[in-house]
Image 1 (cartoon, rainbow, N blue to C red):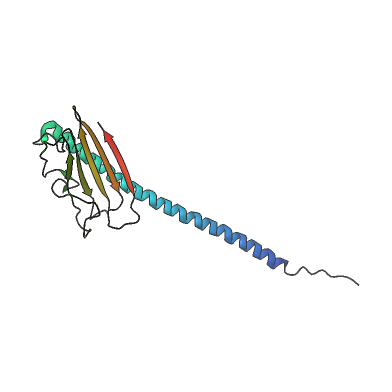
Image 2 (image 1 turned 30 degrees about the vertical axis):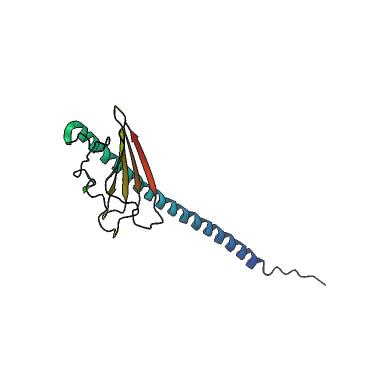
Length: 182
């Protein structure tokens, strides 16, 4: 009597094994693609924040240089001590009078948290001027710029914080800062 071996089911088992392997490779590739897209989006938003910070620094440097050359009545667009009366208005950044207004235009119904007009904190030998620049309505980014002047001769430090969005309550806000001292 001959014993017959039946190899039935081996083909199905092999096909299931190959299909499972192909599915796991496909899921891994999909996961990597999704993560790369998220990383790319974060890098793009980070660039928006650094560009906003750069715009803030450049505006502060422009006005400091312009006024140092005699282009402003007080000789400086930014406060240098407690005797400073302030430029009042006329300091334009991105088409906005940041000294007089400082609040963002539409599409914001209300200014974002901590959004204030041009402000000056000073002592007898130093002062810090803070202002905001908005890129709305064309773009959602903004920048907070601090210009600190102290000492004799005057040392100037500009710190610009750029944000990818200034919309109130945004959970995806990125901040990048630039620091210039001279």
